[in-house]
Length: 330
Image (cartoon, rainbow, N blue to C red; front, side, top):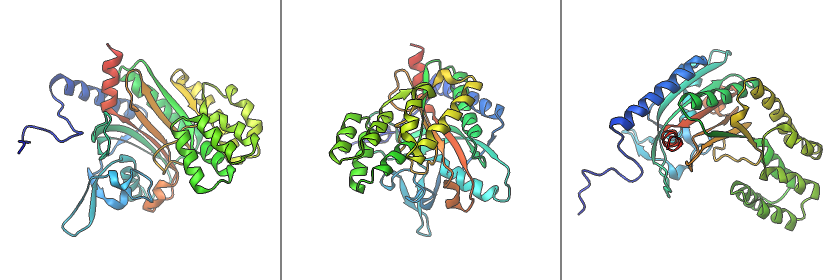
């Protein structure tokens, strides 16, 4: 029988000596950056009740959570995602205020991936949540914090791709296709198989004007001038049209904040987190396959915990950031 006493389980690892010191320095710098933007620290438990991350919340799939039971037989999980935990805490401690609440955090998350592909089952995240403000200005602030936090950590080469949930969702809803075909379409767009998506739309006799509009899901754009030609075609599809106009306003604010050098617009972006309701974004860097940062607007999540309040936030995965810093300095 194999002796496991000197080994760690698959998907976790020890961090020590200079590597851990560098990690602590990066976390300190992020904390300082978040505080500079007026965000107050919060810490939530490593494990919570399963209902905090249930299917209705729209976080990680149930079969990818580490589950166990307490003495009363209640199902508990190691948190796979910190945002719902912050939402629960905000609903508990800030239920009697209508003023915006700005919170920042750091902590470990646990996801029981079926196929690792270089991913860790335990990773460290640091991020911010801006609760109680539904404006495009709040979205711009969060993206500005992301850019400044990564720059201040020493990262020089990175890009934040920004999309909007209503673009892909609005286009797919407009097709009036069956649910099975819609699921296939989402998968094709998510896998960036845009030729396959076009073939599927044509095979199901979707309106040509709408097929032409689907072209935006396959493009990465740098400014509204690049998606202006699609606005006229989108007028028939309010959800899509409104989302494109919203991104135009966001662009102007990001330009004022001088962070556009690190921003692109990926209009076909889809997130695995179902609680997102507006803009979504993902950050990547040279030599790192997994995202450094994920985030978006989640205006309905807190209502699950009894507080009807809009919110937006992000999480930086420290493990990926450390790898990016190492690769950038090679």
